[in-house]
Amino acid sequence: MATHKSGGQTGRKRQVSFVIRDEVEKQHRSGVSSLQFDDATGRLYSAGKDSIIRAWDTRACTGNGDPYIASMEHHIDWVNDVVLCCGGKNLISASSDTTVKVWNAHKSYCMSTLRTHKDYVRALAYAKDKELVASAGLDKSIFLWDVNTLTALTANNNTVTTTSLPGSKNSIYSLAMNPAGTVVVSGSTEKVLRVWDPRTCTKTCKLLGHTDNVKALVLNRDGTRCLSGSSDGTIKLWHLGEQQCIHTIHVHKEGVWALLANDAFTHVISGGRDRSIYMTEMRQSKNFALVCEEQASILKMVPETDFSGIWVATANSTL
Figure 1 (tube, one colour):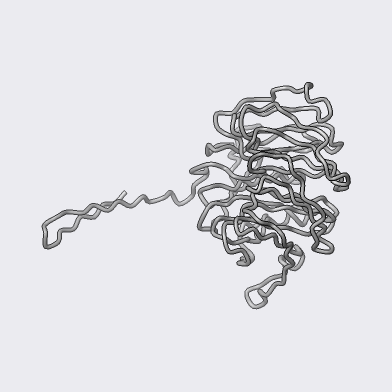
Figure 2 (tube, rainbow, N blue to C red):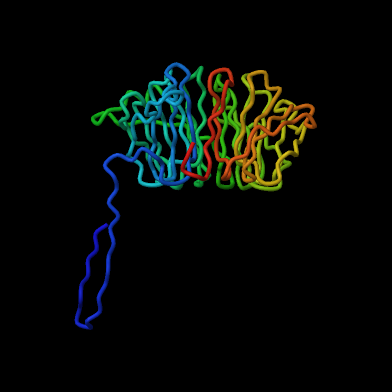
């Protein structure tokens, strides 16, 4: 830390302090907002409120090796969400600096920056079968991006077209899309779920039931069922075809901020403000188990291969 003192005509002294960072920071300095796990390589990507994305070798965690691989520094504000695409080759990030960035995940450098949003970008969703990404945020906008187009951008060819999904009336905090890219669902401070068909860019329905911000969403593979977690403390299971809630789960004492579901869509893993992680049977919510308790509120979870383990991001700086 360096200090500087100066005196003016009044003789007053002013002190200015500078904090000099380490050349390589291997740990997040504040809460971790999002996670992605690459099954093929065992790499874990963490996005932080310190504006940095870090890559980790989870296989080194079982021995005495150093799991830290690299840091990706290009954002200038919180990184709120990340998705891994193109078979793990590329990473897309959303930030409070209002940008969406495309990264070479293996070489840890920023390939391009998208500046379509006008406010914080809070959420991303990825359709693996279509290589399609959706982004949304506090500007109430949802944009659709073709991943193959984004990864082909260069300094000399950086023009990209995007499709928007109109109709959101409030800031969007959560987003989900099924692998086939046939359904997009958003959650917002409006306390409702809005459902779109991204193929036609039309809104198909609005789902009412929550009494607070919808912070987490999960779609099943065919896009017929949706799980939502809300700051009202509940998890709801929705039938999108019938446009109704078919079950409400009450296991948390406070807001639900993170959700996972198994492939069969029979069990949900949830975490949130109460620092607890539960596994619950969707149709028999009395069948639930406390998985673990963290030291801070849970912001995101990501499973390892076949749900053999779960990585958890919290308001603390550790994973």
